[in-house]
Image (cartoon, rainbow, N blue to C red; front, side, top):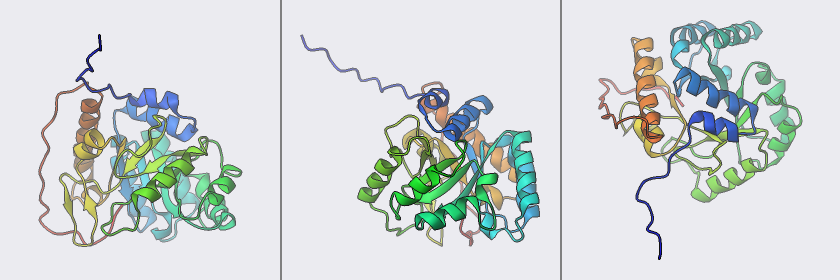
Length: 286
């Protein structure tokens, strides 16, 4: 007699269970931190001065699991800025993701990660890399980066009209799987890897789905975490440009965490919050 298939959806793994599957130390740390701190919120700190960057980290540090930086847009970013950022990360228990999007030949990729003007690997727990240059940069980085540093491969983007195709995404994911100790996961709009140990982060998150005037496409926390299977919401201008950054961060933290609880079957579905901006943002984030 043929057994009828169950209509119940397969239970999704918790962050702690994902940590046990990961072979990248940075991904393990972040998965465990998210469960312990009960937050899957990352904030894109598009600050242009050290003071702005550090002030934001102090304000919203208690609410986040990850701070995403762009060191090359911070005027006079130096070793003192990096040291204070690391101190705040330790104090408030969050990790640092430098969104460098390395996309060059192996030699230059290595210099960008471990030398250059910012010495990124000295202070960042995660560094983003494009797959367009092939495996060369990953091989080079695997030979020089600390085991505690994780690479996030850009598999998809949130900007309208970007040239990434599904075939390209699949190739990037396959490439990442060949470097399990180095690649922590993927920057993507949805779940792109079937490996539970890979962490997925999604930029372009707002309180409701919309497209900004500069082509940034936004998804809600519920869509990103509950529906699309990503692990981390990356919120930029909706927090950074808010008049009350802490309150905005607390709102996104709650929505993101509730969406995660729904996904793993530990909470009742929460209604989506609809939000209409009074003024269209003009700068780009995420």
